[in-house]
Picture 1 (tube, helix red, strand yellow):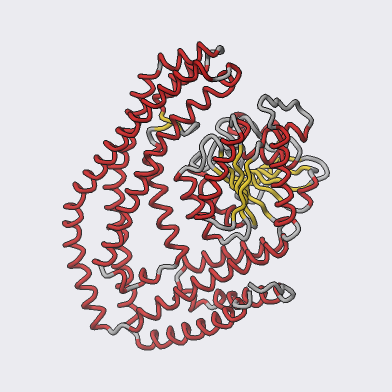
Picture 2 (cartoon, helix red, strand yellow):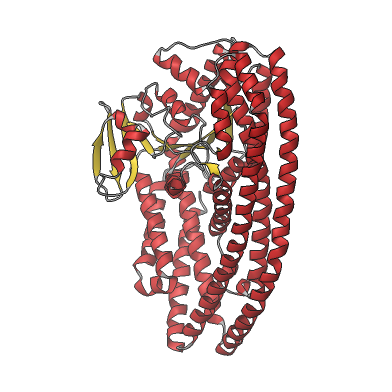
Length: 578
């Protein structure tokens, strides 16, 4: 990419003007379709806002990772709400203001003044019913110096509240840089890696920081180094531009606002040093280069717009080249193939259900092995663990271990099931002849959305048997609450052993329920994929036949498409300089 951005503003304006020519052409927009032109207008609006609004750093990650505490540590202020269950449940945008303010920004553009206390989950939930429109995000101003340079966006935990997923992804699209927060207690699960690969990597960010929070929960430097190395290696495979830091958000927050900092392990200087390294990297690679980063983000989005538009035009051009006789035969063959495939699909379902049964049996075997080892570890705690560590960390350690094992089973099999469904969907496409039509030119960004849709549906199916507030098997929670009530080391361990069999039994029962959800989802999703492919194919053939009825219309369409391709070609030549 060129290092010379002297002409960037002029070239961005030129490319946007080229796109405006396309969107102002009513006949061409009718050819492209309402849904497509609406999407392109939305993207252009986002680009316009990106050029006008402050640089945006979005903080994202799974639930219970301490994102809000890290933001408070960065700001050196108690600005982001913490200690609410299950974390932040709204999108909170932090920007500079001489006096602190809090406002709810609604979908209709109106703002409602709030107090900092209103950010507590219970109070905000009560207020939502009185807002005149849907809440978009909370706008918080603070006099933290860093906010003079950038704005920071705090997002709800991934897989926390499903109805916010699209809003979080919209803010991710608008972001200029990203902080992804992982946890040293649950290091980099499959779902976290998948989210980064499917939602962050395609955005082509020039800088992503991955913060491994809660390293203060580790007992030795060897443990900290091992976890940091593990996540760094995973990041190098998935997103090479990421820079990884192991930090303690709570220790840094306490240091900056002058609170007591417990230092039982003697690692306090290390925590401070690691957070300082992160802040220096952020200053050097983001804040001082924010104008260049934003320009690169805009050019990246413009390239996607141009590529999508060119793919769409080529698709339509391919359709109108088909003669009527070929289209009639294609239509007849398509309808015959639909009837044959419907019966063939029903015959395949028992094989898929058998695969899921085998997955369930494999998961049960893994969990029994895990619980056998876990009992040994609990017993070993009696003789080796420090009493203070038991009282402070044993409950969270035990719960995280069980939860991670539980989720790990599902994540592995989610991917297997995802592959099965995607493979069958691709086979349906080929057999229905979709590859000969529009869908053969599906863009990379659309393909990512299709895969994300499938993965999200699987995740929803798996979570139906889980407590959404903590991402944990629901029937297991009462036994953990019994353990949490104990205070002394011996009472905690004895209670854990007394509840051990019940925890194991209830966890495996919940696991079975999740695999039953897998079965229901897989059969429903295959039916849905078939119906969608059938509708896409039939609609595409019908559209092509309709176009072929008037040679005059086809000639006009060809001229419009040729002119549009010429306009895009000029824009692409400019973008090639960046």
